[in-house]
Each structure stands twice: as C-alpha cells, then as structure tokens.
Length: 146
Image (cartoon, rainbow, N blue to C red; front, side, top):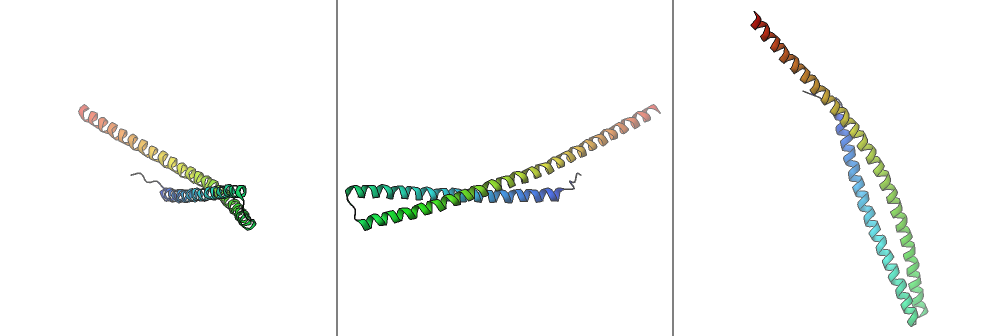
C-alpha cells in the first residue's frame, strides 16, 4: 500500500494552517467589535455636539457649556485612540492573512507531492498488474502449444 513519507510534515502544516485560520477569525471578530465601538463613540459625539448647538441657541449657562465642551474633547480623544486601535488591528489582520496564505501554499505544495506520489504508485501498480496478466496469458499460450 502507498505510504507518504512526509505525512507527518503535511499533518503539521495542516495544524499550523488551522491555527492561523482560528487566529485570523479572532482578529476579524476583534476588528468588527472595535469598529462598532468606534461607531458608537462617533454617534455619541455627534449627538452631544448637536445637543450643545441646540442648547446654545436657547441659552445655556457657562458651566454647562464647559461641561459639554470638555466631554466632547474627551470623546475626540477616545475616538482618536479607538481609530488608532482599529488601524493596528487592521495591520495585524493583514499580517495574519499573509501568514495564512503562506501556510496554505506550503500545505498545497506537500499535497501536490503526495498526489504525484500516489499517481506514481498507482501507475506502477497498474504496470505490474498488466505484466502479471501478460505473464498469465503467455503461460496459458505456452501450455496450449505443448
């Protein structure tokens, strides 16, 4: 029967690829979560900016206006930090995608080698079978000729 000499390596490469797929999936989930948080911060900031404008149109006391402005300044800082975090996660995601691509490529190369080995084995088996059948035919013919 056919035995692939590099099966252990192929199994290892498959495990590496599966691990990278899991890591990539986790990074994608983290990215989506951070994007949702960023969006909620942006919506909240927009809401309070509009609220400040509405209150200023009606009259607002100075302390209340300062509170709004300080809160909005804090929101801008949070949004900036969240954007930086999202950008870093995108970089990590890109790196992980490249790693996964490379791991997949290495696995596929080994699978091709295995496939070629299997084909050579089957071709050899078919040739031996054909030789065996020919030999049987020759012997039968020789017996009939005697």
